Image (cartoon, rainbow, N blue to C red; front, top):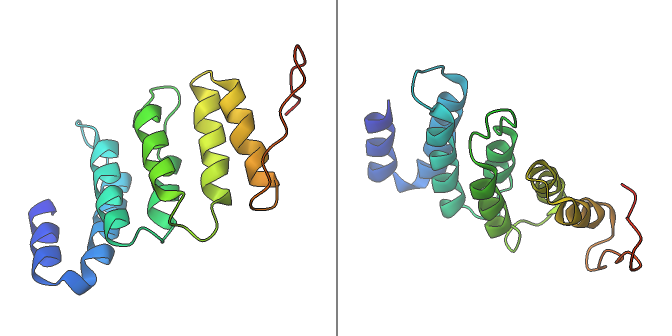
Length: 137
């Protein structure tokens, strides 16, 4: 399946985004003894590289995260989501997922920061908590 998809994407660049997105979905849905989550993220990254303004590869990759097993690794997903922020028209879904991933990693401040960014109008910075005060979620 990988070889076929890679060949089609190479021969027909006009459909490469769709092929990579399809491949990611196939690995996402296919059970294997090896980690198909990593392959799915690999193809979501390839799709995003071809069309960085499309939010779906970032969102679908983040939705793959299994917190109990940390697969795919949250740190890699955070980096991927952040790479999409400058390109997508509506970053709110990415902010929400970043908030969840940071919270999973135990960085509640960054988690809260991104959750608040998701709720605020574009361009408004999230409020900073007063010293000694814990922000409420």
